[in-house]
Structure formats: structure tokens, C-alpha cells
Amino acid sequence: MKDEKTEQLLRKIAEVEKENAVLKEENERLNEEKGDLEILIEMSAEHSDGVEQALLDKADSFKEISDVILQTIPVSIIISRISDSTALYVNDQFCSLLGLTKEEIIGNMATDFFYEKPSDRQPLIDAIEKNGCADDLELRCRKADGMLLWLTVFSRPLAFNGESCLLTAVYDKSERKRAEEEIRKLSEKLEAQKKQIKKYLVFNLADTRYAICLSEVKEITEMMPVTRVPHAPDFIKGVVNLRGRIIPVVDLRLKFDMESDEYTDKNCIIITETEEKRVGMIVDTVSEVLNVRGEDIEELPLIYEMRNIDCISGIAKAGDGVIVILDIQSLLREEELSLLPL
Image 1 (cartoon, rainbow, N blue to C red):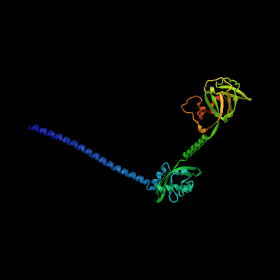
Image 2: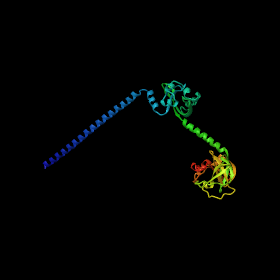
Image 3: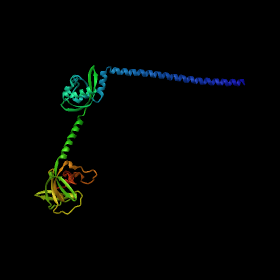
Image 4: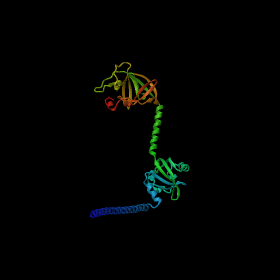
């Protein structure tokens, strides 16, 4: 019995020693990992110090650091003395904007080479004194070749080389300004056209009133014999001999896909001329010459889908009704004109 208990105790001791050995091995591994981490942290710190030192070696003064920054941003930059506008620093983008070299800028007053007029600098100074900065300020400057530029500037006070200066970022908005000016001129022209009065010849086709600009009308004649032209489209009725001149004639009813009608003594032919080409247009009746203001003509609503819509330049208001304004230039397409004996 005693021997059995002894054996059990020995087995237990052996198991404990085995577990102790495993724990000892695990502890040694953890100590190794801890040492590796300490070495890694130390190496990282040394590397960080090296990077910092490398940066300081490359740029050991504010001037060098600022020069690196100002040269790499894609904005025109100038640093000028507040007291007299003398330029102390410019980046390459600024030189390119004005078409000048750094030697032609540094040491010279911005009022001499930058502003259109020396007095144009005062609004910038006023904004700095009032707000401590200048934002989105518009001004004009002159390039070396004399070309005027529209600019937007943003400026902040800056101590540079121990002097009170302004750091100014310059954005060229000349292209946008020119576009805005062109839009303004076109708008003024459009407004003038709206107020302009033009004379239109009004005629009828079925139940619709049409009109063409009177300046494009050469004359109006009564119906006369029309000679057919072989292989011509149906709406080209043929030609007439008008005082020795052969004029092709178009039936506007057929051109506009309307139902044809027998000609009567009320029908007439309107002789038009565009680009030295005369064409006759058969209409039902001619009613009047009407003065129409440009502002009384509106574009055809987009809901309309029809053939020959490109020859309608607008819809004119006339009393309680409307008149369809035709564009003679677009009434006959090039391929159709080529079929006419002009």
C-alpha cells in the first residue's frame, strides 16, 4: 500500500516538474519577444531622429522651408513690403503670369510692375487695415507685353526677413471675365433686338397665318402659268418666266405637307431673294404688312414635333392670335436648292 502511494506521489512530482519546464520555456520566449520589442522601439526612435535630422539638414531655416512650399503650390505668390510694395519674393508661377523674370521683379515696387495704376493697391491696403486680411479682391494688372489681366487676390500680413510684409496669392480670372463680357454684350444685343421693330409680310395657308421678313421679299405677283420640271419633288411646282428671268416656284402647302387645293385668282406668288437666289412661293392669300417687335416673338415650344420645324424661327403675338414666323434661309435645304434651276 505504501509503495503504491509512493508511486502516485512520484508521478505527481514528475507531472509538476514537466509543467514547470513548459512554463519556464514559455517565460523565456516571452522575454525574448519583450527584448525584440524594446530593440524595435529603440530602432524606430533612432530612425525618427534620423528623418528629423535629414529634414533639418535639407532646410535649416524658415526661408528655405517656405521657398520649397511656395515653389511647389500651383498658385502665383508674391511677398511684398507693406510700406512701399517692394517685392521681396515671388515664385515661378508669378513670374510666368506676368511674363517677367525674378530679377525684373525682386527689389522693385509692385506699384510699378504689377498694378494697372499705382492707386489700385490702396483697396488692398484698406482691406488689410480693416479686416486684417484681403479675400476675393478683384483688380487688374498689366503683363510685360501690355496685355491686361483680371485677377482675384487673397492677402495676409507676414513677417518676412524681419520686415512687415504681405503674402499675396493671385488667381488669373481673365478668361472668365472675357467670357462674362461676351455674354453681357450678347445679352445687350438680344435686348436691343427685342425692342427693334421689323416689318413682316403676312400670308395665309389654309387656316394658319405665316410671315416672312419684308426685307427678303422682292415682289408679289398674281398666279401665272407654271412649267413643270421633270423629276422635281412634288412641292416644287416648276418655273415661271418673270420678265425674262426664270424663277423656280415652290408650293408652300405641299412643302408643309398640307392638302393641296385648286389655284384661284386669290392665290399669289411671293418672290423672295436670299444669297442672290430668287425663289417664288405659292400661298393662298397675302393679307398685310405688319410691324413686329422682337420681344413679341417667342421660340416654338419644344412639344412640337413636325417636319420642316427648323424653318420656323418663332411665333409672333398679333392681337388675340399668333403668326408663324418663317426663316427663308432654312425653308429650302441645300439638297433641295440643288434641284432648282437657279
